[in-house]
Amino acid sequence: MFEFEPLNTGNKMVEVTITSRQMQRAEDRRRDIYDSHRHRTFALAFYMTGNEIEAEKILTDTFVAAFSAAPEPSAQDVDAALVTELRSRFSLNAQAPMATPEYAEPGSANLSQRNVRRTDLEEAIQTLPDSERLLFLLRDVEGYTSAAISKLLQIPETQVNRSLLSARIRLRRALAEGQEAAAEAA
Image: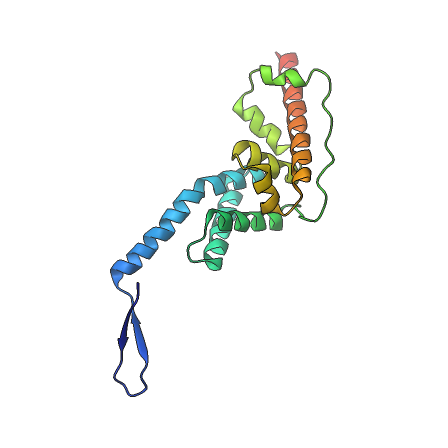
């Protein structure tokens, strides 16, 4: 990657020459890393904030932090930088216990058999507490395992599962209330 050429200046300094082709390859690798994680990072930031401009700021800050920590950050490095950014903006304290799960009301379980509009789901997600929203997005939207979420957020896996249950119940309740309100208005 580097070519070393000795200088004949008497102090035996070594000049490092990086060819433009090598610089272009490094830039291409960084671009590939950015492109491969950009959509997921922006989507999580957007669903957490509900605001495109704020999500763009989080996206930028996340990649600046990830590339500052490692020249070629892995997916785990990008995720860790994203969680750090989200923790600085939301109440996602790793040491604080997540919410105690709520329990479903009778009749809310059959919500999965109804059609739900995407906009209704997005609005319902915004009503979740910050920590439950992040857990729901990581697990049910992005497909992370409970173990991976536990490791990323540094919380026990049982706490992840309890909070996910609570988030799903809250979502069902919010969606059911929204559908009932729409039915009454019609």
